[in-house]
Image 1 (cartoon, rainbow, N blue to C red):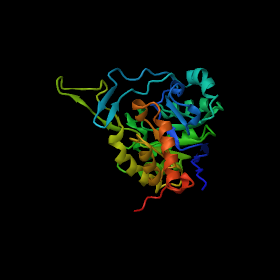
Image 2: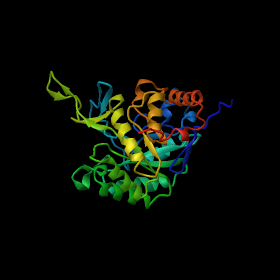
Image 3: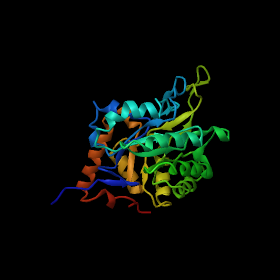
Image 4: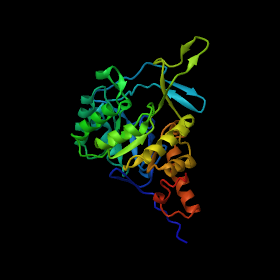
Length: 306
């Protein structure tokens, strides 16, 4: 019996050798993990969010452990797109694994300027557009909360780049499928979801928030049921590939997202617990397919019986 299985996937025009990607903000700029993980064995690397200018992020404390997860309010600290291209890309360009940058801004113009610079860099396989950021031009409401605002920023980025665009959706909405459809219509080649859920932790001794920013993004196993539900809804609402994330700690978690309709997955919080989590998940997914005589990961996608 032939036990070879096909775990390659196509995410919006980018072919990945396997469906396991890293989640932005949890894997640095990729290179930091080279002593822990064979980066060439990953499906894709999504580096931490990049802005047009360097950002120091929020003041500490910025991370708080919670039941079954963590709250973070890093504030998208980064070196800026220009420094990334100059100092990080030369090393990343040596990899066989596709590298995606995560793009964010405070205005639509910020996104466009980052995309314009990235468009000229061959080693950048695609861009993940983070629309969970506050739109300072509209009173700080996140771009991704409003379908029109979300579509507008995606359309603006689409107009300045030929690279594949993955749009990262916020779960902090009433109906995520409405936003999903709006950004696909605006030119998204794929969608990734979910970003973190807004949360808070309180110190009873001081009666103050544990995070200096007061609120932060909840990630980890606690949000997995919400993420699975939203991935299933979105995968059934749009025709582009969906990349699922949210509390994936092992291969079984990842496979559940594939069954729900995801084409690929991103691993985030698990990287903090186990730096080798991504590769262990690749191995576990492959083993499951072999043990169940499934020849291709594509045969599992969207196979949920409802």
